[in-house]
Length: 527
Image 1 (cartoon, one colour):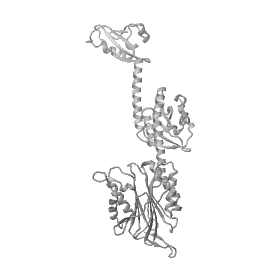
Image 2 (cartoon, rainbow, N blue to C red):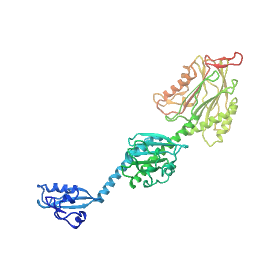
Image 3 (cartoon, one colour):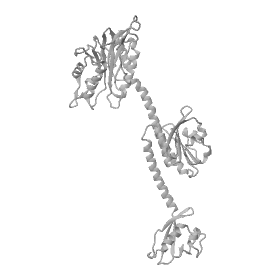
């Protein structure tokens, strides 16, 4: 198309005539061309210093549904020839590429945000908030129902997130019931926004809902929930490509929520199982003080192969059974066998008066197990008679317990025996001794005496240091003795590697005495 310097059409070729059907020779360009083109012509025509045959892209714009580049050329100061090139396809491709880059960047950022936490509610919050920032005016994440209620997370245009338990029928939202079961989403054009129940529309929307997308949140094996995206009437409806993009985002969100839910389930199971594996908190039983201390080999471990238990007798005339053991190995596998041994000993309590029988039956149980590990044990049957505490001590492959007398002297109990779970038959000897008020018997695992540390980090803590430490504990309470020994061993190893450590202190207290409630019946010991 040719136009003179006054802005009148001079000539059109057939293609220009089809593009500008109102254009005629001599008519003003302003009347037939879009504003971007005639404004570019005015600027170019007024440029009196333009060199002859100047050529370049002077303007771009749309004519109808198409996009064009306008290239002007002129000879001297004569009419301007405008060459219009249809670049709709190229610009569409550029827009698609730019949009795809933005979406890829968003998905990468969304994955990072969603995987930053293993908390289910935090993942649901992040899903709803990210959806509002990039996909919709409001978003609702719906988790699988718990009984008759479904956990729902809402996010409105303000970005504020709220949680609620909603008792509603998923069938009230078209496609929601299917999405919660993991079926493909229903196209948004099939969903009537007016049919949405009130609970599915977050507060804060500035107008009626005009378009809805319901997408499943795929999980690991089972659906993680569903995502509802809402746009108001003054915003364009979801396009097919936007619905596809929403499904890609929902897939990442579902994976994150599912991982968080699996972690929560495993953590709950671990907590339940760990409750029975953790060493018990000890206290005084029938006038005798008991205290324990435990430290697992790994920094992040709470249980291991060392264990202890105190089982009070059924009556005041029956002994209290103390068990301290060490299973070969470390970590979870050792802890599992530890739990089995503790449960077996619990079942053998009616035979607790006969240490040899208890050890023999436990030995048989371990030999018939699929485990190939063995264990060492120390058993102590404890009962108070007047001001004296009587003990029967039996070792099965375990370090002999040490006794701290009132004068600070330390002696080892004369007991020894074979490992449990290693040989068809087990043999052991039992030591009988008494504790006067203020005296303590210490049961310990080899993790204490074999702890390596010191100046060079390779010296054993050893029985001699343990004996010296106990000599300082004469007259101390059971809790103080156990804590003191454990502290010294921990200081000795520092940050170095070590085996599990466990100690149990049995102390005859200074002030425990018998009291009778009514002055006639047999009393009970009080501190």
